[in-house]
Amino acid sequence: MKKIVYIFFCVLLLSAASAQQASAQCAMCSVNAEQSVKNGNTQGKGLNSGILYLLAIPYLLISGMGILWYVKYRKKTTGYAGNI
Image 1 (tube, rainbow, N blue to C red):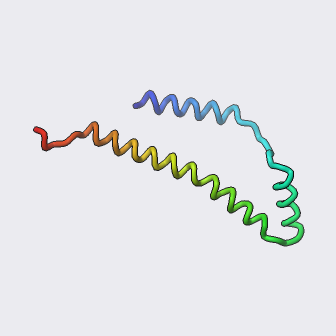
Image 2: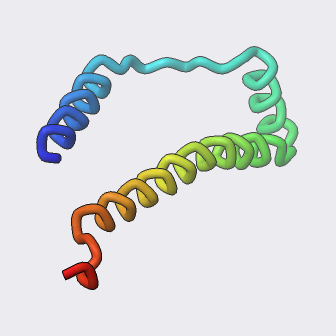
């Protein structure tokens, strides 16, 4: 288990070290966000809310799978005391 955690942190460290700053945004989104701020519209807030919503779903799914895996792993290691 310690080996898996060690490998995970090494991969995380390498990916963080090699990450470059990017301002990738499609032309339509960029123009929409800029114009909404200039005109006083709230479209930019809606755009940001949509991005956060789309970002949260994968994290929730992966967290749920991790919790299920952990619970199954704990059941296998502890066993059932009634079999003695």
